[in-house]
Length: 422
Ligand code: AMP
Ligand code: MG
Image (cartoon, protein in one colour):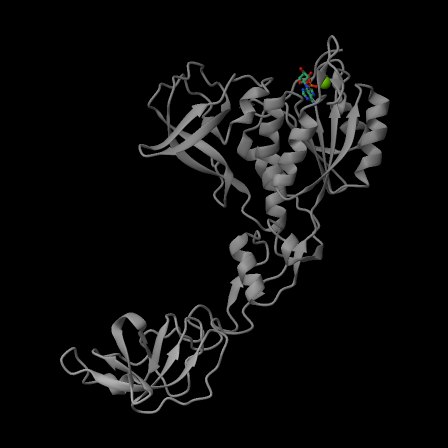
């Protein structure tokens, strides 16, 4: 059999083709405690002012600013303390001229008061059994008052649907009384590992065989991207068995990822499976290293990601193509954020194609530094472990020297800026 010739496309073009598709989104209600990192399926609108009442930001005394108009160190004024309230309490008293209410942080400003003097700036004294305070400075109206609605006012759209729920978002949900929150259902992402050489992870090594690391790696990548991995197991390199398994699984998931078998080797059956299915192959060759064989096909509107079996290439394929597809589908920022970093070692290889090197970025007092994390081969599994970024060497470049400023893509920072504007 003559190996088929494939024409490579640029990564950016591949991403563009993938992003023409989108998932059908459905939403579900989850308890706020279970909502961290889920994606909001509704806008969050403030249904009341925050804070909902004028309150004291300090422990001190609520008073009338007018009373302090002529107050100074030399000529302090004296106010009668008529009530005291803690946070959560509301005074029934009205503050009149010459009066003050002892008030704690978070308590509602009493009727009649329009400023707060902190404990530190007044002197407390008892006169004839009455509590009084001595105030030796002026206060202006509204001074030291957390105004109702100063944080946000009723009717404000605070968050758009598609926002990832972070601890700060959870604080807002709680503020507005969301015991349950509407989030997008996680897309079900099916995973098959293919390869007769694969052992389950609890099997002892045998000659010629290796353990299946990709399935677990890609499942955790999918989980990190907000998807729900559905691991269907590993498949031997057998066309019929693979075809049946892939076809059957398609009805159970929103997206299907396979690893391995996508190249042009004798036992690489994925291309023939796409063909027999009648799937529309978006691309099957990319001008990139590693992962040039990464293939994406569409069948009945569902995307099938055929990732390389080589662990580093599989990882790259997941981050570069699966991630933007899932993220865009929820309305989240699709791309890994790109920034610049200073290379800490020589990189002697030439880069005929865009190269993604598993690397570690450190934010140091010297700035952002980056260093490859291990063997730069698509088959390397160890280089992925400590990586938090890819160095992105552009295609058509020669070696890079220590000290060079290079582009890096950060695994933990999403962006709306397409890094592949080649
Ligand atoms: P393939 O893409 O099927 O040609 O596989 C490329 C290389 O990746 C081969 O050396 C495989 O043994 C290896 N490989 C394939 N699948 C996996 C897997 N699930 N875990 C680890 N290595 C794999
Ligand atoms: Mg294989």
